[in-house]
Length: 55
Image 1 (cartoon, rainbow, N blue to C red):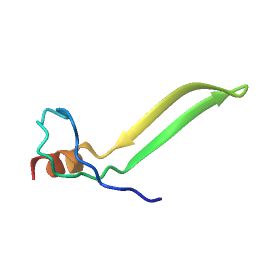
Image 2 (image 1 turned 90 degrees about the horizontal axis):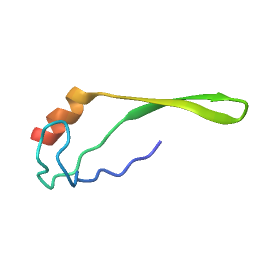
Image 3 (image 1 turned 90 degrees about the vertical axis):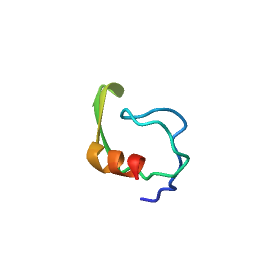
Image 4 (image 1 turned 135 degrees about the horizontal axis):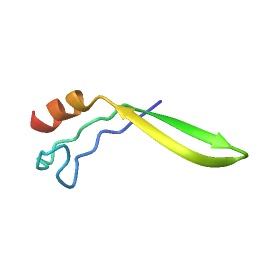
């Protein structure tokens, strides 16, 4: 997996953008039945993101 840190462009997690880049590690879980997507859940570490946003 490879990522490129980028700055948020709008308020996120209650924090106004600072122009500093952040990096997100996210895991997505897809539920598929009969070849159709039924549901997608995403999990990320909100506390680590908040730390980056307020640094």
